[in-house]
Structures are given as C-alpha cells and as structure tokens.
View 1 (cartoon, one colour):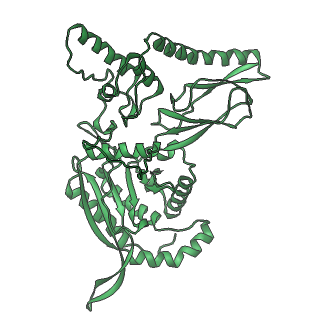
View 2 (cartoon, rainbow, N blue to C red):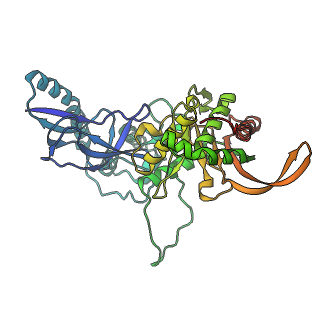
View 3 (tube, rainbow, N blue to C red):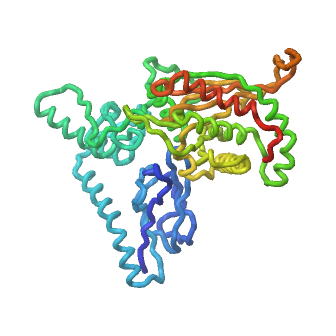
Length: 444
C-alpha cells in the first residue's frame, strides 16, 4: 500500500488559491482514476478536482469553505500495487502537508478560548483559520474589519492578525488605548489590486414580517465587492457614439446559413463586433493598459473579456486570448465556445483570467446604451447597445433623403486617471468606423 497526496492543481497564472465548496467523496470511499473528488471555487468559477490515481480516500485535510493555496495537499488517497521506491517518493511528498497542518494546529493551540463572535454583521470574507483565531483571542469583527489585509484581493491573513495582536499587546503595555491601524508586513499592493468592501449604510434597514431576506451567494458577493472597488479606484468617464450597422445586418443575414453549414457554428453579431474592437486596440494600444500605483503597464497581448449573463442572474467574464490574431471564423468559434461553457458552468479558472479590455452587450436585454463599470485592473470597457431600425438622414451625391437604417449606440467607459477624452473618444470612434465600413463582399 502507498499513500498518494491529492493537491490543489494549478488553475491559471494568476490563480493562487481556491475555496472548497463540496466534498463528493467521504473517508473510506473508493475512488477511480480521473473521478471527481471535490468541488472548488476560484473567484467566479466553480471547478472540479479529479483524482490522478485509483484507491481509497483515507484522509481529508480541509473542510468545506476552507481556503486552500495551489499546490497544498487537500486529501490523502491510499493506493495499491506501488513499488517501494514509488512509495518512498510519495511519502516524502506528504511531509510538507503534515508540517503545515502541525504548524497551524500549534498556532491555534496556543490561543486561549473566548466567547463566540458573531460574523454575520460583516460582509468581508474570513477563512476558518482567521475566524478561529479571532474567537480564541476575542477579536471583534469591527477590529478584524479595520485590519488592512495583505492577502489576495486585500484578504486578511494569519500574519496580519498576528501582527495586529502583537501591536495590540504593546499598546496595552504602554497604556495606549487608541485604535491601531496595522499595515501589512509584505510589499504594498496597488489600489487596483485591493478589494474594497461594500460600505454599510448608515441608516438602518426596516424589515417587516412580509419581507423576504435573501443572503447573497458567493458570486454575487464577489461581484459586489469588485464593482465597488472599481468605482472607488478608477475615475469613470463615458463617451457615446451612434453607429450605422445596416451593412453588417444585411451581410450576416445573407451568409449566416452558409456559414453554419460550412463551419458548424452559428454566426452572431458578437464576433463581428469583437473583431472591430481588436483592430481598434491595435490602432490605439494605450487603451490596452493597466495601472499599478504611479506606473502604467502596457499589455502586449490583446485579450478581450466578454461579459456573459448567467441563468441565476449573476455575471461572468470569459476571456478571448490573443483576439487580434483570430479571423472571423476563429473569433466565432471562441465566442460560441466560451458562451456555451459559461451557461453550463463549465468554464475553467484560466478562462476568466488575463483580460486586458472588456466588451459587454447591454443590447441583449433591450437597453439602447449603458454606462458599464470598468473591470479592474483594466482601464476601459465598451457596452454594445441594442440594434434598432430608425429613420435616418442618408447623404448621397444626388442629395440627402430619409431612409430606414439599422443603428446602435456604443458606450465607452474609461479610467480618466490614464485615459483622457481624446484617446477614449478616438478609440470608440475608430470602432464605429470599422463597423460602418464593413466589407459586404468579404468571405467569412
């Protein structure tokens, strides 16, 4: 018999940790190779962790709602038919997990019991370890909320709490009872990388017996925090432009049947618009940037985020990588694949990472235009309005006349810290020009 360490797999370059949402196997259960053992959540994406080997689950190291870092051991599986050399190697791998578990246990065991603390009055996320430390040390939720977290998205870590306790003890010894604002001991994180919690209303909310109280799910809490963080980070400003897309509407109507027959994909307007956006970004590369403190990071790749509404009312933004390198067929396949997997909850963590510019289609629900919030750390986002038949003035060499045209609004939100009106307006105008000059004689 040998023991195999099941670790949290790498799920993308910027994904460092995940929250366990459900164990599908219990201790003592038999597991086949590639069989799913547990479900996890990273930011907005739910994923599954399969077993690499067949065997029996003999130990579970983390529970539901625990936050686990990539590469950490989450379970031990006992396997059969492994050589002595392989068994020795596997057992050596298990040691770091045992050391980690022992260090956590020792840290918690040194703390004295205290009264239970109610975490229902805070919107911030705290890991089970942090909650346990807070209860042992009698740290109130108000004190926890005041600690500036050094973890991912501003999350409070064990080191932050320990530093807070250390400073609190020193202040008590010096008879200083003023509140302490502890700074993180790790390098400072830029404002665009910190999660800003939703401010609590100063006015009490009246609830009567007829009102229904619904707790936000995990994804809605994340969206809420990200949106507030974006508004508090970026100086939002908008530019709007109306576009005549009559040629695109007629061309799509003419070729959509043959396109689907040849490519096996439905041709929607989205890939056509994405193609124009990618071209415009190549013309104005300073719209494809992010901000880190006083520095601007100019992105080499053009990765277009595509905001998609889910059946439960939440929002997710899968990313089309290197969009400028795709032709219309390739763009269509990418758009359809990501949209289908988003609706079926099959996106992988890497599918929503690395976006450099985002497009959202508010016209799907009939909106003429909108003022979208920037997806941090990006600096701009484009909203596509509904396509409508409207009367319009048509200019010809023989004179002007009124005709029926297909038109839509483009709404461009951008970060005025680094994108001025000239760039923000010129960019959205260039997108409009590409759409209005669409070649109706082109092939797919």
